[in-house]
Image (tube, rainbow, N blue to C red; front, side, top):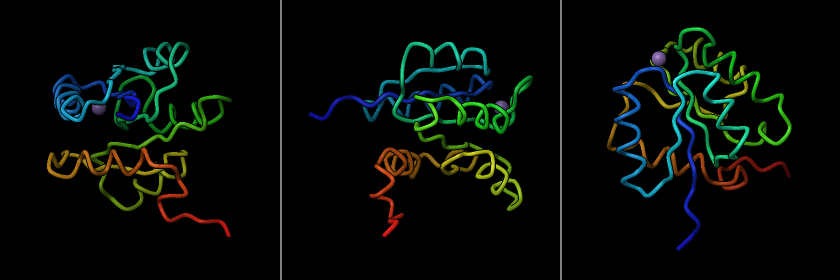
Length: 133
Ligand code: MN
């Protein structure tokens, strides 16, 4: 079996954390959770997850700000960050990408496709069709 992948989910909403945890654990991912930026940073002092799932709308530090911050930190900036956002407007998607997110998954979460999307973002970027010659 391949080594178990670790995913850090940053989300202030309890119900959303439970749903995502259930889905991820059903696929045998190891799940770390943070309710806010401070908890996320504390996790990242100790572990290097394979993927970060980032809520955008959070009190205190929002997901745009936290992503931009994490993408400046050596050793952390390489970790793919996928926004989970209810902000489905086109401008908001572009804002997640400008903040440094590697992609986004829309809320409400589609439980039939969520794990496929997660698996996609866990692949090396060269397997996602982004070749640089
Ligand atoms: Mn939220």
